[in-house]
Image (cartoon, rainbow, N blue to C red; front, top):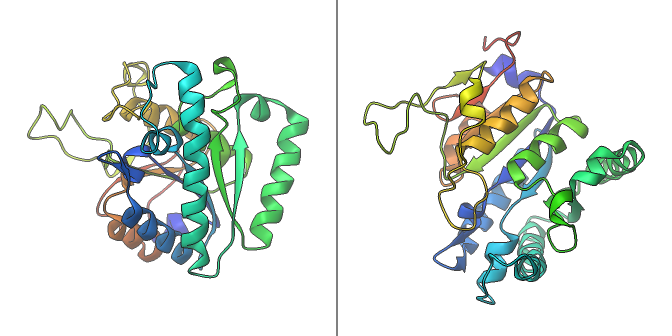
Amino acid sequence: MSGILKSVKRIVVKVGSSILVENQQVALHRIETLCTFLVDLQSTYEVILVTSGAVAAGYTKKEIDKSLETNKQVLASIGQLLLMHIYYTEFQKHGILCAQVLFGAREMDSCKRAVTDCNAIEALLAHKVIPIINENDAISPRELLFGDNDCLSAHVAYHFNADLLVILSDIDGYYTANPRTCADAKVRLIVHEISPEELVAEATPNNRFATGGIVTKLQAAQFLLERGGKMYLSSGFQLEKVRSFLLGGHHHTGTLFLPSAATSS
C-alpha cells in the first residue's frame, strides 16, 4: 500500500456534518482533533480541506425550519462564519493559517474562473496556508449548487490536481452489503469498479443535516475513477486509523477506490 501513497503529494480532505455537529452542538473536541490531524498531514502532503456543516452549525445558534430555502441560506451564513472562526482558532494553536474559499457549480464550469481559482489555491498552498472550501449555500441559487459536498470535494480534487480525496464520514467504508441489515457485511478495502445500480440508488443520509449518504460518496468516487483519480473513504470518528494509513501506509480499515490500472503493491 505504501506504493500507492508514494505518488501522493496533494490531498483533499472532506469532512461531513455528522463529524462536526452532534446533539445540536458544534463538536469542538472533534474539530480540535481534526485540525491537529490536518497539521500532521501537512508535514507530508499539501492539504486542502472541504468542510460541510455550515447549515448544521447555524442551527445550533438559531433553530428555524431548514426545509425552507431562505432559512437554509440564513443558517449557512451563520454557520459558515462560526465554523471558520473555530477552524482559524484551532489552526492558530499550531501556528498555521487557514483561508476560506466558497464555490458553486458555476465556478467549476467556467474555464476562466477555474484557472483563476486554481492559481489562488496554488498560492495558498505555496505559503503553507490550508484552504478551507465549502459550497456557497448562502447566495447561490439551488440550480447552481452541487447539492452535496461529496460531489464538490471530488471536483475540487480533480480541478486542483490533488492525488487523493479523503472523505471522513459517519460511513466508515463501502460494505459488501448494508451493515444495518446484514450482520455478515464487511468493508471492502479496495474497489476498482462501482456497479451502475448503486450509483443511481436513492440517497439515504444518516442524519437530518446530511445531504448524501453512501450514494453520493460512490458518485464522488466514480467521478474520480473515470478520470484516473483515487479516493479513500473512512470514519471521521476514528482519525488514528486514517492517520495510520496516510502517514504509516497501513491499510486495515476504510475503502480505497483505485482506477483499474493502479496497484496496491
